[in-house]
Image 1 (cartoon, rainbow over the protein chains, first blue to last red):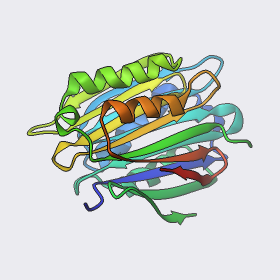
Image 2: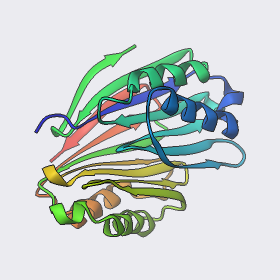
Image 3: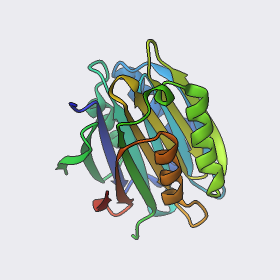
Length: 123
Length: 123
């Protein structure tokens, strides 16, 4: 079995803390990231926590984007899971890193479908 | 910064192929997995693909469960992302493995929030 999906794991530190607590802005960012790279959106759910923090998940054709933020730490955990040729996951990752103004992003790609193999951590 | 979230990555091979294409059953399985282990469900979205394949995402308090299935390969990619003490992610993983009747599951745990560090591949 070849790899069926590509899973990008983003740990974004030193983000803009106000943006991390701004649900409408985060939702817009994830939707734009998905749409600008050719994904088809099939569903979404976002939630604002009190006193702060946002969780959001967007389901895309056979894949998903998710975000969980900790404004108090300036940290966001973002996942981009995709399969197929149409959706440019790497471009989506770059767009999200920029939008959250992370000064210390970590990106890792995991190939799914072959068991779990971890490949190419990138700055 | 300590780890803020625990991310379980499940690559489930040799599953029951009929179950992998059964959206209501998969949705029920993920909801039960979440509820039985103490999670609070805040949103969900599921989609049936033609001719086969299901995508589903459940947003839980500050975390999520996701599933993408390839019935033609007997394969499912499942993610369980959680933070906090209330939600027993490992129990949820075991419940899902059993429900999909995977004869070749791979489980990996990634600690999120410290950059990306991969720990303890199991079975």
